[in-house]
Length: 209
Length: 236
Image (tube, rainbow over all chains, first blue to last red; front, side, top):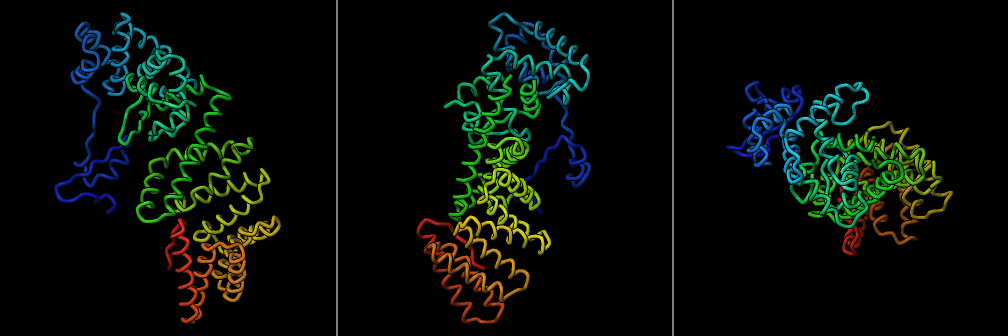
């Protein structure tokens, strides 16, 4: 009954990362839909929207990158924005791919107990990407991003005002603009912002470094 | 990365921000009708952050006076919203941690206030003999520190505990004592609350004339208090 919130011709979609929860909520097996990660073509298309020149100029390397990122939309979003932001420095997809592979190798080489934050919840490549993305921030911006790790991770949603309070500044907008542009923070409704669960873990791991 | 004092200072800034946020939400809730719905939406929007912060304060309250003070304040800042939106056991655990923090700081006023809230919140889920002890301890502290509004409230709630325990005559005596004290202080809302319960006792005794008189006085005082910019209250 609590879920009967709509009228005729309306449907309710519930999402969960937990299969057991989805099974418990779905009336029949056919009501379950397993949402896969993006297929290579779709992932490449998304990367192409975020950084068109990179994909057009280096199609094979771009394809290898989205494969390494396993089609995870968050990771493609972060990688695309990173590439677009740093394209002017002549830093391209080949270098990023090499860095991520090296970062992933280093993370894989660590003992599991040494892996913190997103490294425990995702692949070493994606953890390396998140680290690479925040390493590219100015130290002050990186520190502010890390401070977002103090908030509850699920959902890590908060107002502009509380971010300014956490950062001890009057106007959070310039920093928020940078983080949104880098795909590290997402605007949601009501003037609020949300941090993806993996990024929230990554921010927390930066606090613990 | 931001460790040590910088991070700790940021946590305290955020804690104070949420304390003010919850204070505003509670104030809006007490204005009733649309403001109450708005207050609930304010709380719901930040529920997870509020919980996270309370857990952080509870963890640090044992070693840090500033965290202990905030932890104590936190539990009493938005009692009506906490009662509605938190699980009873969850709210009780917040109050227990707040009580411990108030005791650690030697803040007797806050200690008595938390004990009274523990009585109110614990009543529906704990054994009567257990929760009445909270009211008894609160009354004793309020009298020791001679805080008249707190004494009036503690006597009223102790009377309420007697009422719930079936000790009707004792309850009547405590209610009347509390009413007299509230009258002396000039707390109309407190008077309205006690008169409301005196009305309930009169109904129990089947004394309808007395019940009507108590409840009419209570209603008039609630209206007066509300018109003066105070909060609203639903009569039974």
